[in-house]
Every structure is written in C-alpha cells, then in structure tokens.
Amino acid sequence: MQKAVEHLLEELLSVRSGRAAPSLLEGIKVSAYGNQMALRELAGINVPEPRLLVVQPWDQNNTDAIAKAIRESQMGFNPIVEGNIIRVAVPSLTEERRADLIKIVSEKGETARVSIRSVRREVMEEIDKSEKAGKISKDDAKRHSEAVQKLTDEMVGEVDKVSRNKEAELKEI
Image (tube, rainbow, N blue to C red; front, top):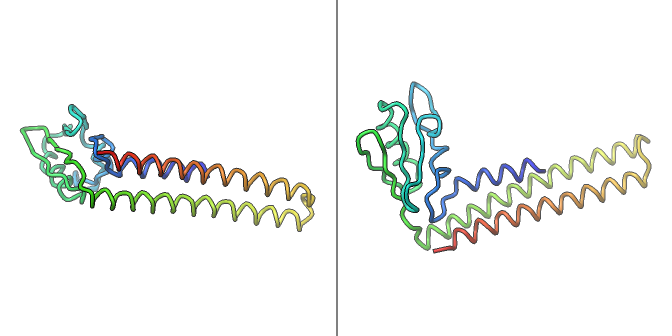
C-alpha cells in the first residue's frame, strides 16, 4: 500500500504545474548511444529562474537529440539551443491545460486507490483462508481484518491528500 502512495508521488512529479522544476524533464526519453535513455542520465538540469530550465548535456554530441526529445515530449516546451546548453522556457498554463492536468492527477490518484484496495482484497483473502484452515481463530481473523481496513483507510486518505495538494498547486496562477 505504501508503494502505491510512493508511486503516486513519483508520477505527480512529472505532472507540470506553473513552476519550473527539474522533475518535469528528468524522465523524458532521449535517443542516445543507440538506446532510449532518461534525460537525467545524459545531462544536468538547473532552475536559474522560476520559469526557466537550463539543461547542460554532459556530452555535447547529445545536445540536438536532447532538444528534439524535449520538443516532442508533449509537454508544450520549445527548447532553445545555445552552444552547449539548452534553455527551456516554462510557459504559464492555460485554463484548459490546467483542467486537463487536474483530470490526469485525479486519474493517477484513482489508480493508486485501486491498487491499495487490491492489496486489501488479497490480504483479506489470506485472512479468510487462514481462518478456514484453522491457523487463526475467528477473533484473530476479525482483529486482523479490522487492522487491514484501518490501514487501507489511512493509505486512501494519504492518496487523497497528495492528490488535493497537487490539484491546488495546479490551480495556482
């Protein structure tokens, strides 16, 4: 269940808000050295200004490939190559794009909740099997079931909190 929450946090890092953050670009796949590699493996990413990212490739031969990958990433960025660095202006979000991103955050949150409920179902089935096999008493089974439900509620609450925070961040202008 905790892994589902952690995965959601990682997923939400790539959802762009109005601010520039290195996590926006880190996972972009770049065709380099005959492989698809994450941008973070090929370059350093800095944030010198709130609306600007600077990508500095470790190998200058990858500069054009990195710029192309950023341009084609469906994030609406238009990188500018200046020698051996790439400047990426982060435009402010339109109201329509904000609504789309909020919908994406909501979908990712629901996926995390489904994953948590799936874990709960599997554990509840194990408790039932143990009770039927005589490994645990009815009281123990009930106590374990209640503990699993309490943990599930806590984790779903955590997912809701994380999702609400990201949605609030997206609504900021």
